Length: 258
Image 1 (cartoon, rainbow, N blue to C red):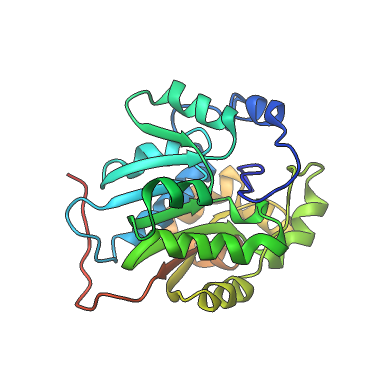
Image 2 (cartoon, rainbow, N blue to C red):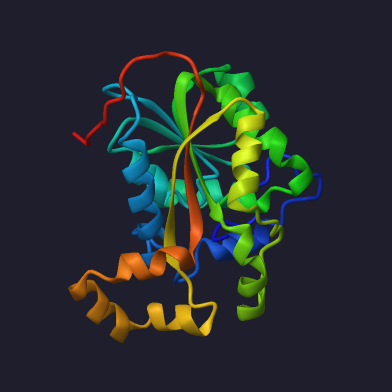
């Protein structure tokens, strides 16, 4: 939802001007992640530290946008950020010159690096910008890039909330085709993944109740009382899913930043 149009298979021309402006905006263009992104990052880290990824895993940030997540993931392994949008890659290189970014799609990655070349693929806020007819190919491409036993983490808005979100906001990005939690599970299983864990992240004020949950006054009270997480979970807009490509057995172990 926050990353427009990183669709590896779209036939129409990519509206580069839109992305150039988006990744330089006050909310989505900074070096540091914003509140929305920090919420997703917390969920991502919580999920992948459950996985058996070894000491220095090979990590792909697929659909990296301006690169904030690539930077966060670089603390845990050897990471590359990729995006099909030239403006995104240019901005990422500008913000994080010490990291590796490439403008390429799934087919290009498979051709240049080979199948089974990553231990972990993270794709955050990309799937909703892939057209429904092309989602199967997109998830299958992620599966092919992972080593047997490797993991993928996908974050995307919950399709169950699309109608409410559309009514609450007056703008959309070039492609907005959300997928429900159940449909994403079915899609992942259909290409050979097992669904290991799922959680949710970030509350948007899309209804009167969620506007209360996101108000500064409520959060100040609820966080002290330990109630915010419990009450807000059903209303969190992002699904965050840990998938595994079956392969190597053995007990799982977490990984920690150096």
